[in-house]
Length: 454
Image 1 (cartoon, rainbow, N blue to C red):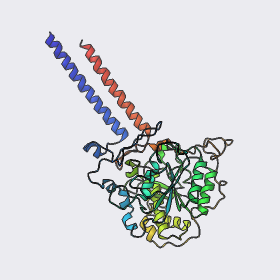
Image 2: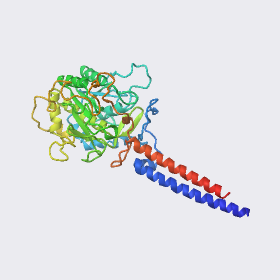
Image 3: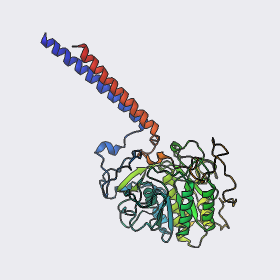
Image 4: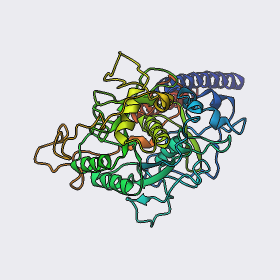
């Protein structure tokens, strides 16, 4: 009898284990289908961050980063090898004409870690409009601005690390995003734009934005245009926006609004906002960028924008006396037309082409063809959809119109080219919840079967 009881218990345990194993496998498959496939490199060997120093943890109170660090390179230049966008944009050919030397690009963002080896010597003294210097989180507690800066001016003096498209340009860091990668007052961004103009920026990169307009920022942008500065901004990401309208300040007349393309293709990235205000496109997915302490893979229009800003720097370095309006005209006139013939609402004038921008014969223009020369802060500004007219305008204080850099921008994800967009946190948490529910169910079934044989 005892033998039979033992045999029954073993059989029940085996069946329960098999059921549990199958349930967990099914849950795992469902989670992968929702989150996206695991990069092959993660299956080949345990992933370790390429760390030039210990990787810092996310700031206290901030949402955890959902990014995959670059795997330990088999060769010292794996990071460099993964920069596919340099080949797509024919960077080596462009560098025969210009490397951006002598041009200052302002990165108005979350700060820039100038101690990163890829940026050592490339970063000028900047300004922090968020903190008074009393915190110890470093110059870029988020990493966003460092990635943007590296895509523009990462050093090319060796074969290691991430090189920028304009490797000899200088970066002027202006911090306007807080530890949660957002800002609540457009006046801070406006102040940053004016400070950058007054401190020598010839190109301004704004990888940020929101739904509401801001007369204060509009006036600051007109200040930049009047002082011969090229301004580039991102169109925005669908996963981080409540509507599909191109973000502000990208839609401000005179600004080069940049949408994102899928890796090594002429297809618009599925997560990119686009529309009539779109001017140019650039690679936005499968990018490897510098971050404080190492590298990570990123995607988004935030990272397409610096590739256009870097191209502007290449042009300004090659023709130091060329006006900002002519630089803008050259970029849009030489873009590689994709999609419907001519300018369209999805791709604008097409994908930025650094080589053509530096070599093509383009007639001179007298002004920025994107600027309507309207009075700053007067034409085209009003409350964002869903807000009452009695509310104060954006830039007047706490920004009731929602002019913020969405929190989701701290959650970039590593995805193989063509994989599902993983920047939507709802999909991640849905898959985790389903997985947990199935696992819990399997445990309950096992317990019940064990009790039934007792």
